[in-house]
Image 1 (spheres, one colour):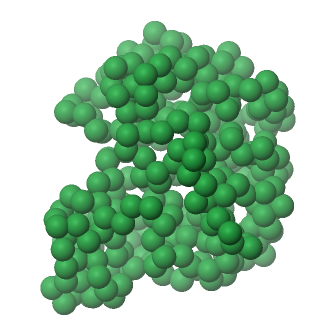
Image 2 (image 1 turned 90 degrees about the horizontal axis):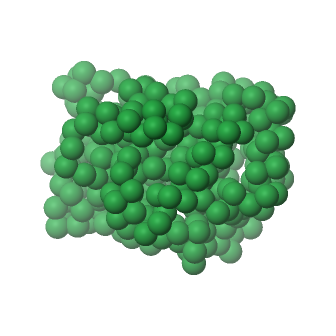
Length: 317
């Protein structure tokens, strides 16, 4: 997998978990309010995108399928640890390629959690068995189930530039089915292109009106616009002094409120990671249990600065 931290732009940075390149104390973030637990259902995906942070593809099985039983074991740990988790998130890869995704989502919903599933809304989701399962979940749990659809741009040309020819049309077809089934959906886009946020949101709003999608283009929770995560771009290291300089609190950063469970190829058991964005960096692996995952996270990666602290982004709803 890609290891771009030690690129020319960041040479000498992000080498020590506790100290920055100029000798200052590196910032860390405590798990103060665990609201979201993510499960990576596996890195296999039905498509290969041009800029996939996790390198998902039809052949990448570096993170293998999680099982319903493994998810349930972590739901049990949430209760045992008293974590105030509101949301269970499922990401991939493409979660609907995992044959147990409906069962995993049901298990989380039955515990009273909200469930967010990230999907490209293409063929894996559109299989009859999966659609029937989603309809059953919607009937039982209503808007506590949300599907966040990856729509990189509101235009077919730009979206297909990222995800392949014809992918925009196939995703729109899936979104139309979700609309007609009454299943709550939101959108995740990207800021890859030379347009400001206002232009992007206006473009999505026009698309939503044309398609009668009940999605608010101006609500950052319903239309999430992610900054591109280029680990080769130069970014500053975050020190303990940065909180006051930036006027931010560690509690605003994603790792203060979430963790992610993955299962590596060949591993006997899943492990818990500090961050959804860093599935392959060993220093962000925290152990096999939620108890171990309660340790603080040292912000020792370019994504920590660009995406979370400076970008202010979050993967949660």
